[in-house]
Image 1 (cartoon, rainbow, N blue to C red):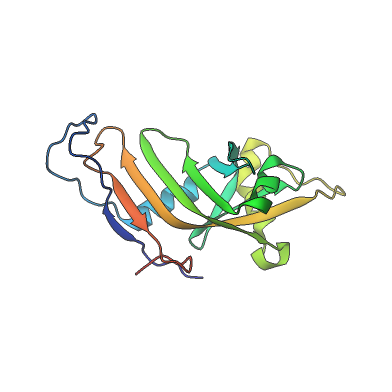
Image 2: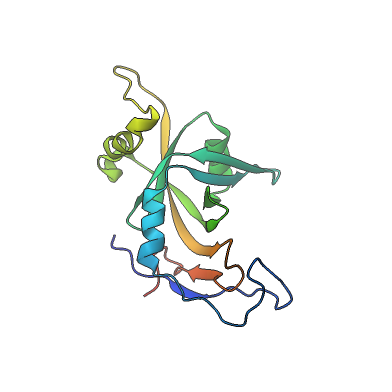
Length: 177
């Protein structure tokens, strides 16, 4: 899948809301989606938020890979995240920074190890410095998921609300042209 650029517009923020930069009336330039996608690819930790059957949110920091316009991550089958996604495949993902905010909402699908190519090899390479290792002879019961975004929001602490952007992806899961 070749990702296209999502549609960007200004988030509807009440004119009375004062961020750090106040309401200057001059909106900052919309960032290039390729720059946003590069931040997603370079991120080390992704906060994945799922919901339990009773609606309780369940945020978890996970390691993952930004591949072809979606976040691919893995968890053990026995985790709350896997159980939550089995009942409700909707999730929110955000990066760690509160100074350069990037939040995505979307649907999550389970992938087979065969369908994702060398996901674990790329994952191990990305996280080797963090202590990720392959366990020889140990079979882990892992689920591989892909979050396909439908909506994303970005802004910076220093320029909010004038640089707040809402990114909209098409319904099929591919970004809009």
